[in-house]
Image (tube, rainbow, N blue to C red):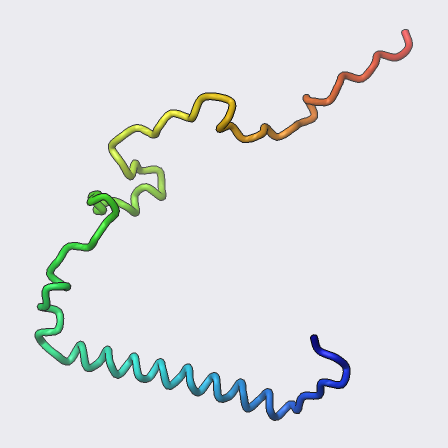
Length: 107
């Protein structure tokens, strides 16, 4: 809990932010250097890990995953039927039709 007497110098906060930014930049530079060393090696992409096909869940064919987003079918099987029974159903949203009818007036 911070009180009114917990003073902080603005310069301390600015130094901390500058140190964090510098550390992040050093990490970026390190990763960039590692990537450039990797790409400079002509045999880098010939290892066993690069020759394997990409892994998918349950060994599914992942060739048309993007087409399912825009109306295409991502699988050849029909969708499963909705669950039956009262225990699995979500509560239905109430609407204006769920209100009791208004009494008739006058005549």
